Image 1 (tube, each protein chain N blue to C red):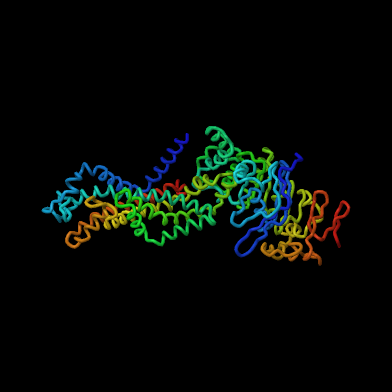
Image 2 (cartoon, rainbow over the protein chains, first blue to last red):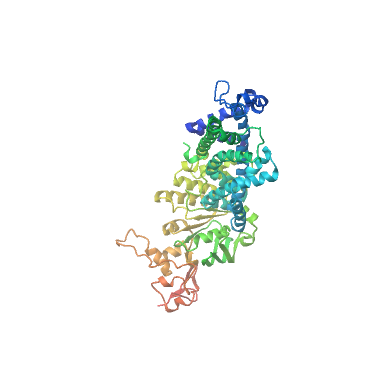
Length: 287
Length: 330
C-alpha cells in the first residue's frame, strides 16, 4: 500500500516533469553524458588513449581521428574528457548530495529548536563561512591526503556551512506558518513535523541550490587537483584538463574549449533538471 | 453530565520580550462540562487565543509563559504533564481549529494524508482501517471521499475549513477549541460551517470553546458566554443571561451597541471610544476604566470584584452584591 502510493507520487512527478521541454532537454543531455561516461572504457581504452603519451602526435587540432584534438603529450582529448567525466560528475553529485543531506539536518534542527542551540550552531558555521569554500576544502584535503574519496569528503565538508544557512532560512520561513502550529496542535512529534511538513515544503529552494552548486564543485575539484590535493595526474578530470590546457590556450584553444564546454553544458543541464524537478514537486503548479 | 471536564483556575499568562512584559491573561477562571459550548468573546488582543494556546501548552516557547494557575482537564493537570503526555493529549482528546484555513493546511500533502496523520498518531489500526476512517471523516464534513487525493489548493476556503474540522474531529476529542473558525470565510459559508460544527458537536458529544468576536455567532451556538477584556473575564453567564438580562458590564453594552440592528434606523454605529490598553502597561483598577462611559471615582484605584446573580457574573463597580441579587449603584 505504502509502496504503491510512493510509486504513484513518483509517476505523478515524472508526468509533470515530462511536460517541461527545458527540463527534458536537460535530462537528455545528462543521459548522453551518462552514456559516454558509463561506456568510456569501451569507447576509448584508458591505458592506451588516456595515459600513454605520444609526443609525436601532440597539439593536433580536432580531426576525424581525434574528435577533440590532442593535448601537449599527444593524448586524445575526447578520451580524456569522457574518462574525466566519471570523476568530475561523481565528485560533484555525490559531495553535493551528502552535504545537502547533512545541512538539511543541521539547518532544520537549528531553525526548529531556535534559541541557544540555533545560536551556537550558527556561530560555529559562521566561523567556517569566514573561510572561503576553497580554502576550507584545501585544509581538509591537506589533512586527509590526496585521493578521490578524500577529495569528495573535503568538498562535502566545505559546502555544508553555506547550505545550512540557506536551508535554515528557508525553514524559518516555513516554520512560522500556521500548518506547523496546527500539526503541533494535533499532537505530531518534532521529527514528524520536520520530516513530513517542513522539509517537503523546503525542497524547491534546496534543489535549485544543489543543482547550481554542482558546477562550482567541478571547478573546485579542478583547483584542488591543480594544487596536487585532488586527482593525481595523469588521471583525467575536467577541471584539471581545463587548467592544464590554459597554458596553451593561445595556439590550441580547443584544449580549453572542450573541457570548458563539458563543465558548462553539464551544469546547465543539471540546472534545467533542477528547475523542472522543483516545478514538478510543487503541487500548486500541478494541474 | 455535571462533572466539569475542564477547570481553569486563576490562569496568568505573560509574554516576555526584550523590551516589555505583556500581561496577556490575568487570572481567568473557566469551567466547562461535557457537551457544553462556551463562547469566548472579546476584541483583538483580549487574550482569547492566548487562553486557548495555554490549554494545549502551545505558547511560543521563547516568550510565552504561564506564571500561575491551574488547568485541569478531566483527571489530568495540564500544567504538570510531560511534553510526551501532552502530545498524546493534543489532537486526541483536545484539538484545535485555527483561524485561517488557507494557511493551516500543508500545501504539499494531500488532504487525505493530513487527516490520516492525526489518526495515525493516536489510533492503532491497519492501513485499510485508516483509509476508511479518512473517507468517513471527509464524508462527515460534507466532502466527497474521492477528493482525499487532492491538494489543499484545489479546495475553496470553506472546503479547506471543512478539512481542518475533519482533522480536528478525527480522533473524537472530548474538547474542541475553535479559534475564530469562520473569521476568514464569507458570511454564507460561515453559516454553513457553524451549522455543521454545531451538528457534529451534538452528534459526537464534544465540548467546545468557540473563540470569536461575533456576538451573533455566540447567540446561535453557545450555552455559556464569557466576555474577555485585557486578559480578564469581565462578564460571564449563560447565553440567555448575556442576551436577555438588563444589566451588563459597560464594555458588554459597548459591544452590543457596535452591532448593527436591523430594526434601528441609526445612521452610524456607536463604537466604544479608545483602544484596548497596552498589555505591557495595564491601567490600575478596572482595566476598562479609561474607556468607560460610566466611570466611578473608585474605578481607577480598586479592581472590581465579581458580582453574581445566579449564573450571571459581572466584574464592575456599578453593581454591588446583595443577599441573592445584585443592584445597580445609582
